[in-house]
Amino acid sequence: MDRKIVEESYLVFSPSLYLYALSLTKDERKAEQLVSEAYYKLLCQMHAPDQLKFWLLRVVKTSFIDQYRKKQYRQSVDLASQQITFTESFESQILQKERNRQLYFAILSLPMPYQELILLFYFADCSTTELAQYFQLTVNQVRVYLHRARKKLKEVLQDEY
Image (cartoon, rainbow, N blue to C red):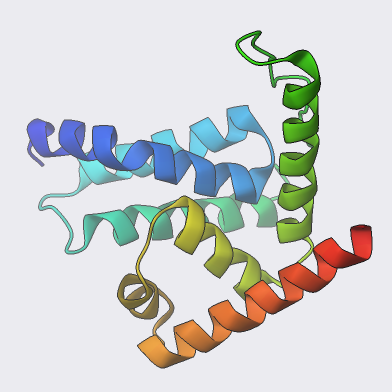
């Protein structure tokens, strides 16, 4: 595989892959390991796969499932790693962090297909067409699932307040 393609894809896709892996593992170090493993597998390929972003997302997910099955992963949430900067007022940062934390846990409380759709659509910037290909659904099915996921997320968030 051409090293230049790998480097360019790393610059473009690694933030999305990392967020996706972090949503699966809930651990920064393990998320980094999954992303590294995906790029290692990409380097081992003879030719660049079609739809590289989705190929990498699938490798991250498959690697996570493999490791989970082997009982190598224990879920943990590392909230201490979030550092507060002093560019905004301290109180507004604390409130924003709490809102983000509540949203994160609300997304994690959704059933798995909805959780994955929300994460990929909003945080990995995947289009409904791309999601349809990834999940092997029609575009309309993806839109319906996204609507249901948003509705469930809204219910979860309203229950908290």
